[in-house]
Image (cartoon, rainbow, N blue to C red; front, side):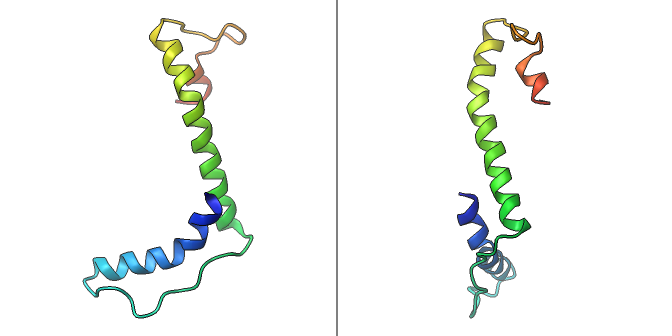
Length: 84
């Protein structure tokens, strides 16, 4: 998902700005961004972190709902450990 969002970022931003400015669709769009650079890794890390939080949240919510205030091993609430 990070690779796909990185590739379409340029055309998506150009289209959004043009539409919001009231100019309609742009006559020419920038090419797809396919370089292995910081933009790609920014998207990859973002989606990995989001996926991790989504996967961890149900366990944390269930534990908090049944009154388990701390993890049995570390003694730290899973939300506090994640900085939430």
